[in-house]
Image 1 (cartoon, helix red, strand yellow):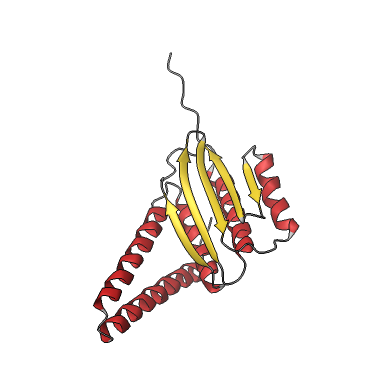
Image 2: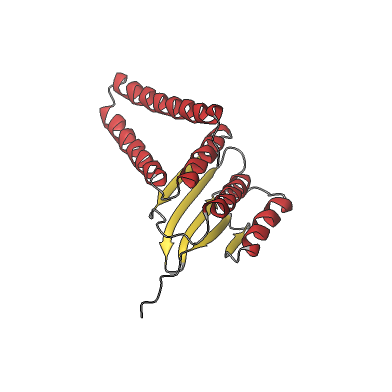
Length: 184
């Protein structure tokens, strides 16, 4: 993935804007002498920042950067994200380009599933077979069939398990781990 200066500047602007918004909310609570609410809000923000930090520590920097770009797109569409990252994905079997193609397609489909102004839960966990990237839209939107077919085709060609349950607002992708060599 080649990043252009405009994309990086856009990400930095989005992060700066987000941080300033949080500071304004905290300042407002303090001005209203609601320090308990300011502290509670600050703790929520810290949890969010820690989860984004875990995402940025993925062993595949391209996936981390792509995720940040998708998070910016979600914010622009009014989608509230909750992110839970429980792995750094140290041992993905796919090469970086294939992993990135699947990763971006999964995020794109998830954003379509969430629709405008809704909430999307994102989870990345390690399971025995690999790394499970899952999305859940609290209020699922209607997704064009082409978007689903595109990701299903990508996953199928690479024999990557893909789950799609639009009625529940859920989808997931299992990126397999590299097999460990058997020592003789």
